[in-house]
Image 1: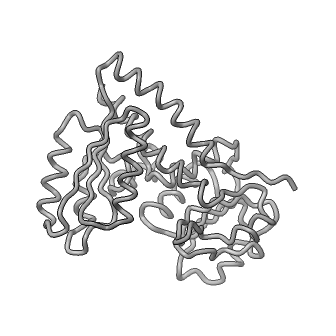
Image 2: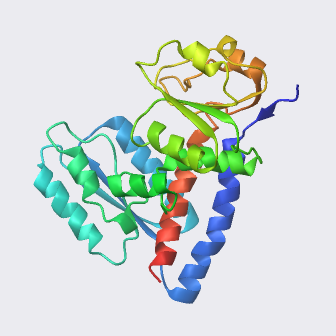
Image 3: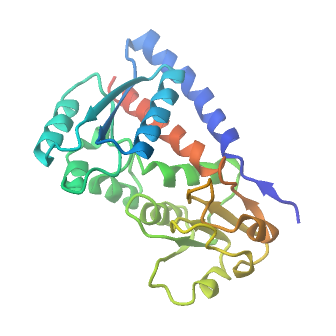
Length: 279
């Protein structure tokens, strides 16, 4: 059986090449520079790294990156005021609040305060609802990346049995909705699912988003399955056991270099989309 490595770096490069032309058009014809504002609260090292990576990706494409670093001891109201200022700033097209925020802050309330037209990371309940109904402009970026990889490699979800392992509001649930919208038959599994290997055994497409390193085993999967690993654990390890799943799969994403690079590219794409909407 021929194996296809679903190369996220290649998909990402293709997206960014197309975006570069669109950014130039916005600047030259409309005098609009797409702008993504990132908000970091506190001193979490991983979050600082993620924000820096996103900022660097923006700058390489000519997208303005406005970085706002707030003290860990601010309260929810101060964060809401910052978001409201960005909502009202016409030069800002996308707003990203880096997760997680300190525990004393109402994170959900902060997410919900982001204007829907600037919710390029797909974190609001309105954005999720629009995604589920099939007309959301900016789905959560990792689910959007998973669908982009399938489209790039010409893998149709229609009529397929898709099993999503994980039900987080920004990954498992929205990717289940996106697959359903493309006519897959979707099963969403989680920590209370009984006999997960039996459920996975009939899957044509598996999306791993459970947050447990090397959890999904190849012996649970049928031959020819498409495996999309959205997990990212310590040591650059995904949620599937790559070697055993590779043996069964017709197509599989590596970790790193699979879903991750495309996730950042989808954030950039949504920011450019939002800038074009503002013309």
